[in-house]
Length: 217
Length: 243
Image: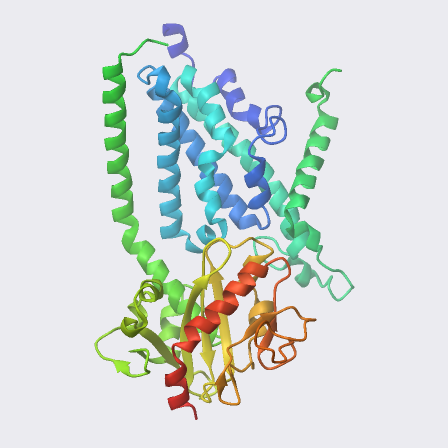
């Protein structure tokens, strides 16, 4: 016990908790979780950013809470406890957005509430927080939230740029004068299937760079 | 995992529920004023949009007091009800009451053109939830000056298109009366020659019809019903005050 307590806050093992989900263990591209919201909120960059941030906060904080309580939570009702913790945090995030970022909360509408059902969060609580200490759980939560967020942001960047011709609402294409040269926005980019195709492209790219991700036949 | 007694589990759940309830009610109470303020600004923004003035949260208050000169509440016969603030009337609650008791809000705006524009709030049902908006009429109380719609949760790309400019722009210049008879505005397929039921010509090039949304039939029908149901209550007032 004392040996682990002396472990520095950012030991190599802990850093790995943070960076693993960004690459080799990415919740979206490797574990293929949380796809539904990745399709819905990535039409524009701004809601995607807010969604990424909200999910990160919820998964990190709920990981810490569950981890801190892990020896007091009765096994038989642990799923209920996890759900209550997640739901509470999500409601608070939703209320905060309504108070301080009203226009974004309108765009995200039901998807903020649906963070509750995001498989990444329940998955991390079950797989990690219940058997690890709060600090490690926090890093794991931030890592997974960021891993989810980074994919969301990449997808949203391309969808907004190619579908609406803007970045964060700033009309880039128009400023570059491409419309007068005959360029047109790709309406397909705004539709949900394109998000799936983009996620697929990212998975393809990632696997071609990292052969260890390819399943053995 | 340790084994826990039933008593422990009950006490644990009870404590959890109490703590969570306290946190949530605290959050709701503390954030309520800001949220209410946002809703108020949102409402002002929508009212301004119906007279084709684009506002954002920073200037909604200012533009609202600049353009909206009057507001009052009517009963179903078109007489002004004293002592009620039109801005605070919740249309959804009014629609549950019998017609005789309903309060019908009206907002009067004078935009740059100098015309006296009448704004009427709308509320109805879409496919998944409520849809709402405002319609503004020119002094003849017949020609549409502008509209704005919004919705709680219509399908993106389909029903949710009702709050997009291409859909809303179609309403400008349409008429709600035909030779003195109230006909409202029909939402129809662009190619269809006849409005449902009415029999009058209502293609989207006509004076009473706009093009519906492909794939958003139930939302479009809900919007049509909303326009009719809300405007028909104002019929007496509109007739009396037409210039």
